[in-house]
Image (tube, helix red, strand yellow):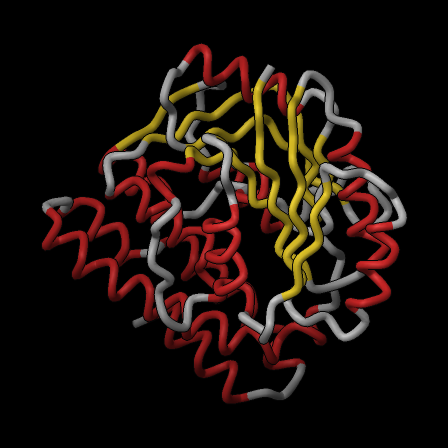
Length: 294
């Protein structure tokens, strides 16, 4: 039986959070401890009361003294884990009952793995199977071959071309990840940044093909998200430019070239351009084109 720390960085819909908590409590063959890290959610006291009413001593609810943001709360989650292996679970995703069992099976086949991702099913707000363009692109970018192990520059090149991982589903090995330093202005790329930093420490990534996790992709309106796209792609571009330099100095020239090319990130920016034009936001439009073409 595997022992897992499951840490949920939380700011959002309480109903989704409770579904997530319920999925953790339904895990089979898993010794788990759940920590919810609330990042100053306005109605946090009521959410804490609802969680505590469950009466499960394995669940701990913590509140940040100040809002840390997405990347900041994820890095606090890294420090909260105490078990050898842990998960940073998003507050709207679903662990299937076989999650711990599948992770244990993959670790037995790949001892000492730094990161492990089981098979994923994408769902929408109503828990229905959902495969929008973003996830079709991830499927195209993901290496073929079912269960596999990736490491070193090969893994870095693949992820920098297009980040096909579903990081909330990852189990991390604590000793290689607990002291990672948060990169500045990295909310949009914190997931890729953490994985890349682990790979550059000599870590490896194991992928399973047995579905054990449901990742929620919301059917959000483009008009409601286009304003955020400007910030998102500015952060992405800065990250890829910085990584190009770091990887060249690190001795991974092909990965540095992949970071410069950032193929799927450029294509994603181009896909957003029509929505920015419809929203008549020329600032965001120029930023998207700059990210895609420069």
